[in-house]
Image 1 (cartoon, rainbow over the protein chains, first blue to last red):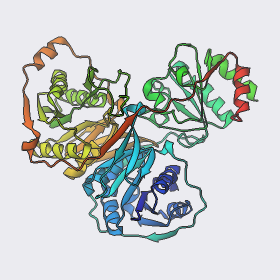
Image 2: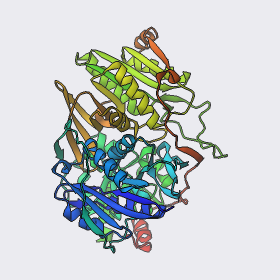
Image 3: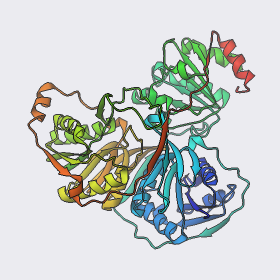
Image 4: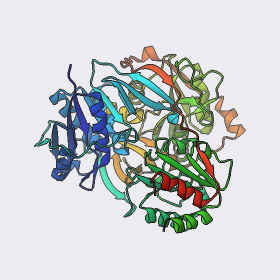
Length: 315
Length: 248
């Protein structure tokens, strides 16, 4: 039986997010026809970008003012109606906060079970997923008789190449959209740095950095080597940096080529967010810090001496 | 205002997880269990509203075997007025939990259903959204701030792009994130008082809720270990290693 897979596009500010391409890569592992569904307002550019993802057969755009801000209660009925009409066997979304919020609502409306955080595909209905903050990996088999709804663990997949040229078609669905949920606002931290979730290099700071002002040294070094900046939960809780910089099980799960962390002791939930990094470098003044158990390269010392020295060494 | 808050029993977050060598799952016997930490934040929030007069009644609900009563007692010690325990020895997956919570919400008619954003055992992050879908209620997930007004709630959500604020009509399902509050330490008199509060036991089979077709677990294994790392003594040595790997 051939499978028909629908990938829900994640986008922001008119741009298709890299997470969508990662979900497409996972869909290719499942095998079958892959379509992308873009729900947006003025979403032509997003749909055109999705059409360049290798492996995608068709992009469908549901353009509606109600879709300007992604709200699960508004999007889910449209997705269920579209997937139903199209006879899709699989509906996938990325495990970004967009997908985490949305996909369970889609599954429940379709009255099917859902697989969260697919990290490996063994068959069209058999997957690996992490449990207990990644401290165990479970292989699960979903019922074949129903539509498979899943979220894709983005850190486990590279984004599909942009070599495709799929068709783009406008789509409409019959779905009743609720008015009980309204967008009020989005407070975004302005940053010219690379995106934390996709950057090949990430520099992170923890409680050891000590203050919001002290984080300047971390930002400066990151800018020097072209890295994105992340933080531990402790640093976010302490108010040194905004929440969207948190790396870890409950923040962002990332897989950069280089992850350098300063003043992060290595709580289990932080480690869960960086396990897929290529090379982990830890700098901490406590030689007993758990981060050194996971790090590929460790250096014991004071970050306020080491960062300037690193800065000088790479100049 | 009446608030329902769900509570899940899970292995305590301080426990180092052991995977059974035969692949049958995570070792649970003789391992400390507690209330899922995200649920504790939800309970704390509901109780703060009870204390400031916003909430008139807070009801804790849980699904599971007899041992779950322990976590419901904890919720009562926080200050919940009463508890409902839906009893079953079967593993309950999110879609089935959502069907049960829908039945309880229809029976109790709360203005707000608060839940943790995910449980730290299966990390599914589904039950709140699924319950909202089943009830056709609004949902606001990953809440770091909730302001209640007449018939609506304004919820600030922690999302990848920053802090999003949604306004939802009540009743609604709101799932809470870490920074909403810091749960209190329970005092002995409250723990003693909780012993006298009622826990209503409902048998799952009598709720007329069908269990969903489950997702089967084939095997559970420990994650692959990263190859052992090295310690360097100086910044120059570190830079040399990184240059060797063409990382800087």
